[in-house]
Image (tube, rainbow, N blue to C red):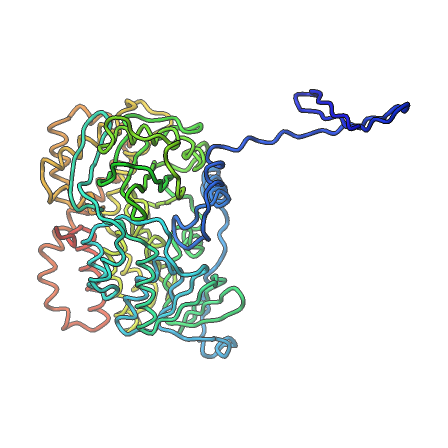
Amino acid sequence: MILLRLQPINGLTHLTVGTSFPHKKCRRRPLLLRPQAVPSRTQRIMESISVSGEVGGAGGAYSYEALKRLDQLWSGICSAQEAVQEPQQVVSTIPSLFRSSDLADKAEGSYDVLVCGGTLGIFIATALCARGLQVAIVERNVLKGREQEWNISRKELLELVEVGVLEEDDIEGATAVQFNPNRCGFERKGDIWVNDILNLGVSPEKLIDIVKTRFISLGGVIFEGCSVSSINVYEDAAVLKLSGGKILSCRLIIDAMGNFSPVVKQIRGGKKPDGVCLVVGTCARGFETNSNSDVIFSSSSIKKVGDSKAQLFWEAFPAGSGPLDRTTYMFTYVEPQPGSPKLEELLEAYWDLMPEYQAKSFYAFSSGVSLDNLEILRVIYGIFPTYRQSPLPAAFSRVLQFGDASGIQSPVSFGGFGSLTRHLGRLSAGIHEAINGDYLDSYNLSLLNPYMPNLSASWLFQRAMSAKQQSNVPTDFINELLYTNFSCMQRLGDPVLRPFLQDVVQFDPLSKTLGLVMLTNPQILPSIFKQVGIPVLLDWCRHFLGLGYYTLLSTFADPIVRPFLHTLPSKTSFQWKRHLEAWKYGSGLDYKL
């Protein structure tokens, strides 16, 4: 007979096991059982969902294991003092000719451009292929888009048509769902409604497949399942060494490896991000009323998440996978420091707050939804670091950052697809001209990622929307500030509101908005000074004045200079074109209603 006896020893469960025999005394050997941690609600939910394999790009992984890896990375960023870690030296400069080196005979292919990172890199690669360049893509995974949709405006997709990446009919093929109207909501304050802003749900899986097919038809080459090992920059070529030993040469390498590119880590010296947007969410089935979207919904006050304070924002829109399916994001802006909320902690808060948010939403005034009545299709999460020194100038000859790796996206957006479409035309034209003229040194390449005062001015918005851990402003200040600003922009009309909602900051609309805010709600000004701090405001004033200066240059100097460009030497003409583009895009005057 087997004997099992449970006895408490020092707070742990102690299991005594013995075998009983008649007329014999039995010696019992104690075995100590260690208590097992109870799985979190996030773990239970995520492990109950069937997930497909990971793909490249932000939001391309859905598993609980991937969440823990990302949280570990995030904890390392938060715990660091200045530098996260000593970065790997990926890029080396070799002052000699590649064609005279021992590696020349080992190169398995030579191209005009090699694009590292295919999820967003496929767009610049196809645009350059359409201009007649020989281009190859290196992607560490299979080159395909994620299942989770991107929300974007039709106007932004048409910019892909203009540069030859898509045909107009392709937009319909890649669009999974359309929805209107779209709300900017501020809890306990009010709502502002707009149409045709981020109102298309585009399937990355379909879109990237369409662009991939076009890229290959134009002669492009794709190396899948290959990671970047090192980059050697010679005087006459850039050489890419891949895991597995494959060697490729080219005239220019485009780094499209995203926020955590090893090349960017090397350039920035492992520096901590200045700010981070943390995003969690779901795609879930079970929403009976599901035709409109939230561009942004601000919680009324700061919440406690883990050991930290956070101002929480929401975004939601219908998903194309079914009429009852809806994507919901919860996000917050933080400075990376010890105690910052982890993604899993945010998800734990999300499960509690999401039904409450839906109950306050425009499509569910009465009862909202219950988490128990929803089928969770995917759990979404991501970290989007941003740096004040952005866009990132080229640090090496023959190597250029693109997309999220370049820091071209707004500090208040998570995901850089919208900024990619906006800048793709000027970048593809500039890169094509640089290749043809051999203007591939770091100075000339840096002109393609120039200082943009409107991007730098956006830093004030992220700081104002970040909860301070020790603060003497009211807990509802951020929600109040946003509602005041959006109300003023609505009063000033579409020329002010619509560019801002698409991450375009312009001098005239910003000046009008600030003036109206001071007139209508002057009592909020002391809290603004307390929230962002005098040094940040002074630094912002420098970029605000730069925004005005670039607006003047683009409006008045550009028409004078442009007619003379064809009379200049080709290299000087290339440089002046880039200056004119910097004025135009840096002032937001490229945006058209």
